[in-house]
Length: 110
Image 1 (cartoon, rainbow, N blue to C red):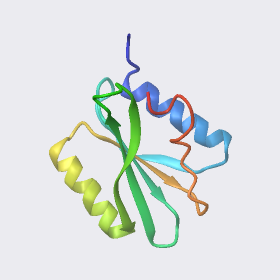
Image 2 (tube, one colour; image 1 turned 90 degrees about the horizontal axis):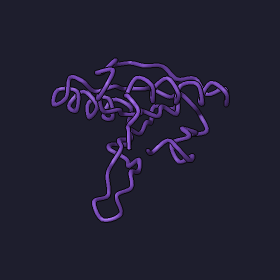
Image 3 (cartoon, rainbow, N blue to C red; image 1 turned 45 degrees about the horizontal axis):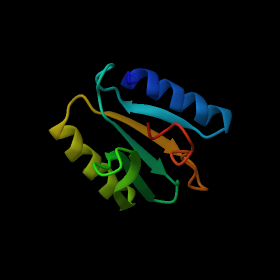
Image 4 (cartoon, rainbow, N blue to C red; image 1 turned 120 degrees about the horizontal axis):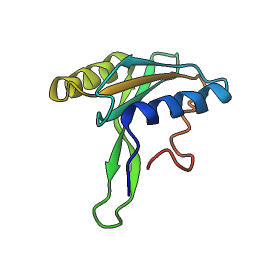
């Protein structure tokens, strides 16, 4: 089955967030075709969470898992470390006091 390009997925995700009036922006533009994507959720209270896509070898399904959480500065450091390993990485920052990120909605883990 053909996979979506990273750029297409990012644009679709940003559009979905806009429809829910959730501010989000790309802070690191990765490889358009095959770059991995991290999503940082900033709850605007000094706290944040970073999510990455994970692949379950047993079921073959993808899911979003927490890479880092806690003080925003610590989450930013974890993201910077990941970018050091993978310069093709996309980073999207979502800002929502209620903690909405929509990653648990159908179609966003694929």
